[in-house]
Length: 525
Image 1: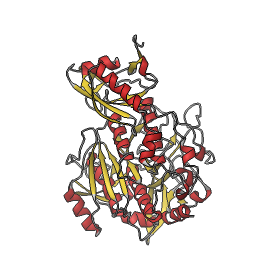
Image 2 (image 1 turned 45 degrees about the horizontal axis):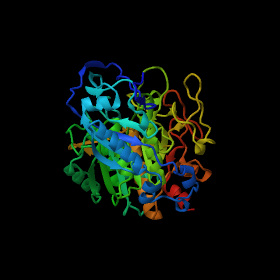
Image 3 (image 1 turned 180 degrees about the horizontal axis):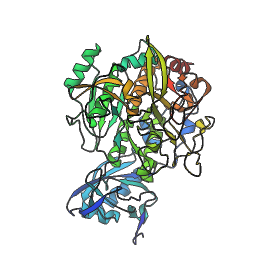
Image 4 (image 1 turned 120 degrees about the vertical axis):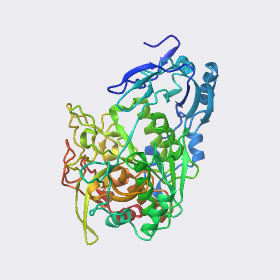
């Protein structure tokens, strides 16, 4: 029940991680840092108004200054949060109107008093974490101002969506495979427009752990005969480029993302945003990349978790961050998951992965790609008997978007047959058996998973933006149009569990895999 003077934030309720055991209270003097997200200005125009035109050149994108002025937080709201912080002895770390966020720091005791919640340590299958249960509360006078408070609970929020080809289904022993490709070869099979390398563009990668070693990048690109791209690490909430030395861990995700983008668009600068693997760190990384004045044309996200494992307050703010990216002309590509239609939850129901289920991102599913004589000979849904299958299905949270209304998205496979946002939108090579040759922590290996598809598409966006000399922006309204569908290879064979591939859109591979040259023609005409 709400305590006097405070009211709960809608959608902020938390339960312990499944299988977790409470161990002890959090020490009262332990330091905690949170991000408080405030409401946007009431005068904000809708995404539809700004993105009504299908052709990127005809769209009206906002500059970052315009966004901060018209869609960011009111300065008065930021000051009200700062005054609240002072009242409870908390310090303001940073405040940003465009990101609608204020970072606060203080002790556990101060945070518990300010937000009327109790913090404790838990042991769980995901490891030890500091957590809370129930809602977060704020003073009643801030109820209409504060939309989310993230960071009190620091449980691991997401997992990377990659799989490693192994000798006997054991990912502990990565190896090279005869059916694998370099990223350059995959781009050629998907007919990425020639004569372009992403020069002048920037691609952002969101990473929630691990790191890269410059020596590995030097060796990898030298072997491909490609000029090594410029890679810049960006620290978010204290995280940094910190390789673990284990190619099975998060280093695999970081290196896979960098090497795919760098091989296909070596002229683009790659900005790698390292953040803690928490809902706060994840959101702060997205908003940092979105509002970075260096202006990435694409954001690639290969991390996620089932919708059921998120709070509603977090999903709402992620989706708003993706809306902001769309208004700034940024294409956001998200992996749809590697655990089939269950998304790894063993309750007998179908689930989709978030943030891929946001209606303001391009959700990227997975295929098994085979080639002969430099051309695609077969492409089916990725669903490997040894483990791993493309995620996809119908969202339990987000409604069916207008641009997907004619795609014949079926009812959910779950009881009740809910109709909602269909996942994925597009797909690409993801089966480790036909995966990507990469180098991680000094080891040459073959990686797959839908996390390879997000940077694959982001690299295509960088090439196209170079030719257009303008952002590509939010792609889905284009892809789902008649012309957009003609730029995709329809994948009609296979299943991810509860859903089967079929002609047209399906919940395994979406509209299909890209034909880059055709997509460029669609976007220029």
